[in-house]
Image 1: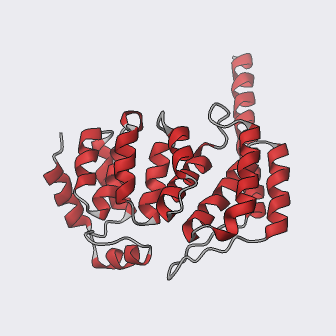
Image 2: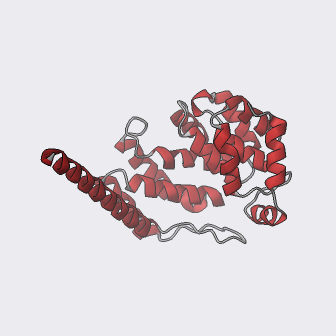
Image 3: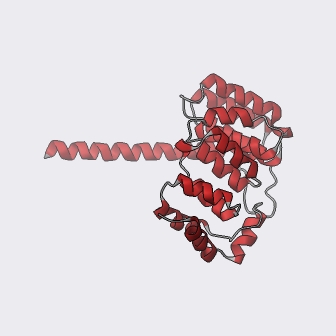
Length: 243
């Protein structure tokens, strides 16, 4: 079993000055080593799921260690208290989205999203809305009528919400549009009315995706994948019948 000291040593060796500059432009703050996402994946793989180690990594306050913590933490073991405690440390969108992604797999996803979405603070609201983006297609978490209510809320509030919250709301609209055809019509009508969502990404190459084209591309990709699966299933059935 890897210890915190072992993992921190691996992170330190993998870090680069260039990555520290890049991550700083994305809002990450010191202390950090500047570990690439490829190396984070390499380090995370043998660790598998280790919730105790994740807690230690988070407590270190090192940015790279916290990103790694969110990769190896056990979503099912996250309590609301721990989630709230980790949220208090979030100070950039990298951690906000990674925490939201982890919590979207937890039993508390809906409750925490409901608790945080309306916060006037950027990072709690961002995490709350990102959880919606990750779970909008799950009927056991959101009913269609609840999602319509969120579309109306976004319509009323998006222009005035903090910068990164607008980005996450944009992602929520995309996710809701992918849920079903009726919701898609509602989202696309809103998109046509309000136009592109304005988000300041600073000195980075990041962009907030245009909703309608992104939805179209995703649906086309899903159609191609479904056709490919159907073709494989047909070929397998034909081979079995001819055997």
